[in-house]
Image 1 (cartoon, helix red, strand yellow):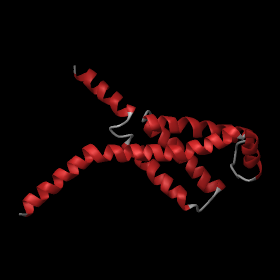
Image 2 (cartoon, rainbow, N blue to C red):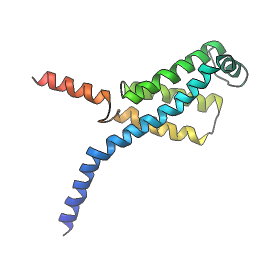
Image 3 (cartoon, helix red, strand yellow):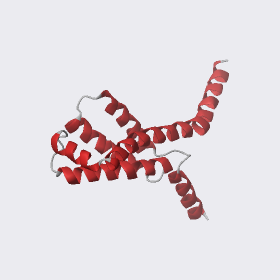
Image 4 (cartoon, rainbow, N blue to C red):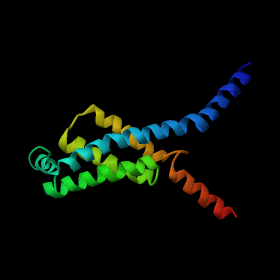
Length: 148
């Protein structure tokens, strides 16, 4: 009886990995991408205000407010698109994780939300974009072309 139960459980886990996990990976990519995209669009639509914030409110070291605002805006607009496509997922997640750490350390410390973002980004960084990503399709094509 217990072996049969174990087999059923293992079968459900395998089905979950095949059918559910790719949707969860996609949901994480869409969600965290949207968080950063909205912030990037806010900067894009009001770059002067963003520069002002980088100059007077945010305590980002080493960069001038102008450069920091434009770099943040560029990253917040480019990296989410890569996440949504699942293209270079690990690099995009790493970039956004570094950005989140900078925000957490220098701008808004002790913000619980940042820890959730970091968990999602860490999962994407270590696991990749999943089966519903361009990364997956490209890697499958490379593996198939090398085996032929």
